[in-house]
Image 1 (cartoon, one colour):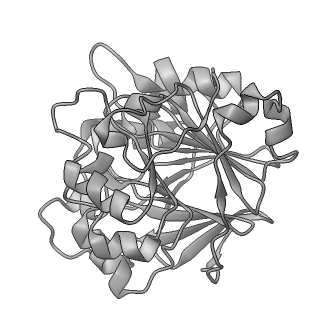
Image 2 (cartoon, rainbow, N blue to C red):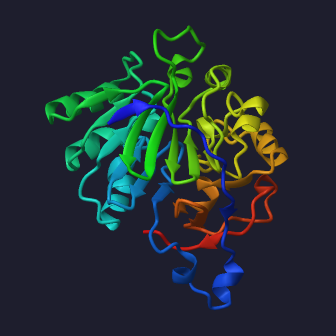
Length: 318
């Protein structure tokens, strides 16, 4: 169901359970909320993006699907195994933020291997082969393709909603990188907690969201464009005011992501930084009031790029 946007609410405190608590015998069961409202897992798909959102009621939303090359397919090697490990036999919604291969590469495989309720897109015209392959597979399998625009809210469950904050309705203005500028940006609301998913939204898209006074303030931020300096501007980070910044990025990637400038901006805002190239998969669990985080690997705390990060519970996810 798509309806008018919800009103913003104050962000609660983010809780980061420490390894010391586990060592003291507390145990993960004592730390974990008894009934998670929303669980968001940012998978390590290398230089790409994929997040799996799971709700209390058993709904599964996949946001982007990593990269596919001649040698590998993140949909087959990472996303599907994770979904199966979680007992997910279907995907209620597959959200493709924009047509770039590092975000849609695994989408055709997911659409071929699992029932998918609907595909959510920004409606950007594109001749990108993998993106168009994914849409063609969706049509062949009778999966509805829904275009989203800023101002819409998708009600997932009574306590969980997806607010669309970019791109705006109507024709899109010219941009140097229209694919990135037109990325779908959504804010997930789970009770009083919030998570902003930005795709590869760039500085132009960020400025547009601020000019329209979109509700971007969020506890957790999936940093735009893998930490590229073309995103995460100072005014945007000030408006979002994230307590935790999650960067999906490949190890030793050729683009130099994440940028030192972006890491410094996040550190100045007081955000705690977690990166998939260092932590592996990162899971954020909301009980509707607070977030708890865990990582697949313990981050290398002594490295300079990890300024602002505090130890989080390290637990094997799959």
